[in-house]
Length: 99
Image 1 (tube, one colour):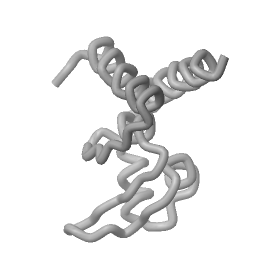
Image 2 (cartoon, one colour; image 1 turned 180 degrees about the vertical axis):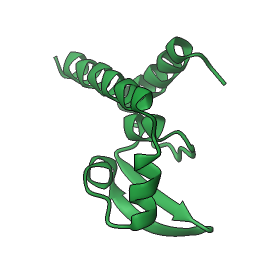
Image 3 (cartoon, rainbow, N blue to C red; image 1 turned 120 degrees about the horizontal axis):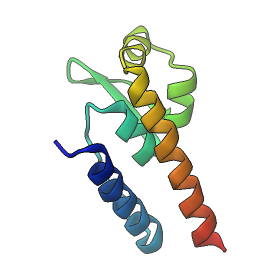
């Protein structure tokens, strides 16, 4: 496991490479804060089956499945703050790339 600052640097590098080189990742993680930061689209699996699929922002804002709601509600508030910080960094990078 990486500390938060190193994790953010690695994730930001991956996002920058994705945007500049038009890469597609299949990113598998149990860390929802990382998934929300990295993924435009997200799939939620339960017992080996995809139970929800769509834009990560939409799933996070209004999950359809009870399992997904429980998974999101289990994310510690510290992680939610981490998400907000990462999302803000991502938006800043997009603005810089588009300038």
